[in-house]
Length: 407
Ligand SMILES: NC(=[NH2+])NCCC[C@H](N)C(=O)O
Image 1 (cartoon, rainbow, N blue to C red):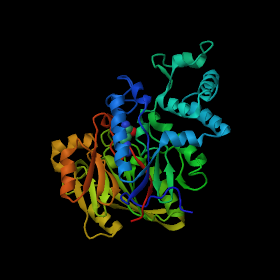
Image 2: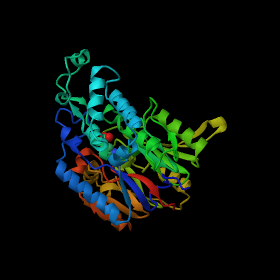
Image 3: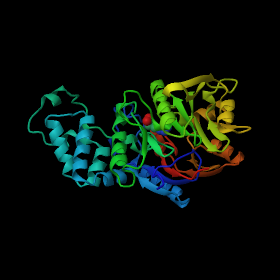
């Protein structure tokens, strides 16, 4: 039986993708909380939803099956025992492992039908929504200014990050910031309990780790080459760990770890570097030095389950060798102009989703980068982006490929 997750490249024809339609969690971002929630502004929800529906329809129009994270989650929790266990863990990871608030929250959530409950968990729970018979010590110890007992998860529409499909399996990620850590608990339940996936996929690395990794840093370059960002969100230890697991259990024999700046505009490798054709990549010029080089390390299997590691700087040469190509076309964001590149990268001009070799989905606002892609022979489908882009993520961030055709 074919694996329900099958992704052996960044560019193979996309067959199935997982999205999350932004919901009321977006309306629970406030000026005081937005930086902590990893937003730079507050999107206007009705327009964000219209834009997101347009994105989903653009994919469907290309024959791609669109699955929704929130729907898969509700389906995965169909069994009452699974649902209760999930809520227990979600409430615990929201800060209440036991005690009165834990019990009251659990009861409040379990009284809802499963889809409403899942949507509510994304949205967050305000203090006044739950009935507490008396002030608990837990409550007294908390920040009383903060209106939520369970925080919203406004980053959930960036489905790229809590997990990453690699070959016939995935990584379920330990994410960096508390604002996003609970998202991958939902993935865990989908993979364990949804009939489409349960017992049928390899988990190359699960979320029970201290070291961090996020899907925006994980790029599947071929059926044996994997690239990963050394970034604000993905640590060296996690990279070595996933490399060891992939070498041991999968067909992957090469990991290219690329160092990128540690800042919010470039939080993941896919905000500055994406693969869009057999030999073409988008790259934000700010990650390259004056020679067009960037620090990177190439990992291979070594003796006794260990790994070998070589340091390189010439990324073009590294990619040529790993992908067995005579040349590699690195297409600069904003055509390399420092102002345009910085502006368009900020709104995800490098964050390109390939839906087939040489065919991509991008935000319409990055018109300089988009024109350049066309000049390099790429077919570009543009989607609307005024509100969605306020969360600092583009079409690649907003999509988690589940199945792609092999190249
Ligand atoms: N794959 C990506 N680049 N995702 C972008 C995620 C943006 C989100 N606000 C965060 O900071 O986590």
